[in-house]
Length: 168
Image (cartoon, rainbow, N blue to C red):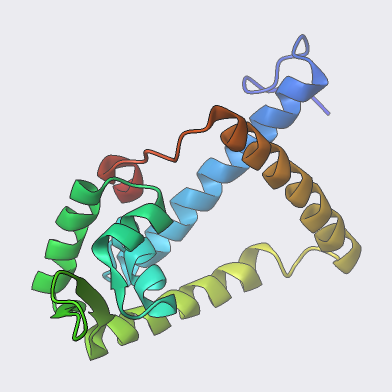
């Protein structure tokens, strides 16, 4: 393997591994976001749509916590989604202090589109790998995810991702 500007020879194996992982994450994100934009979807709002789809009737506070973003950030995204006819807010029948979030038919259509994009993405990026490579990648990513979660748990603070991060 020849060194590239992203991987000079003097970097430790851990740093080269991190650099390769980082390049992969960035490329993954760019491709996924491009695919969504090509279908008229706003990438940052896709997280809201997916979460509401999985938890119809979720409150705005619960959604913010689930996404690891602030309530004002979620509020702005929800206003845009509501204006676009993707979600609707309904007052809780049992406790009128709560407003619950639901997908509209347009929201369900967008959610199905997201699944189509993910299916195409998987077919293009993951399926060409051998079964043994995919199995090993799942194992390694599981270890990485567990290490990241441990670091997050040690910090003791919830994620504070903001709208700019979700919109990228």
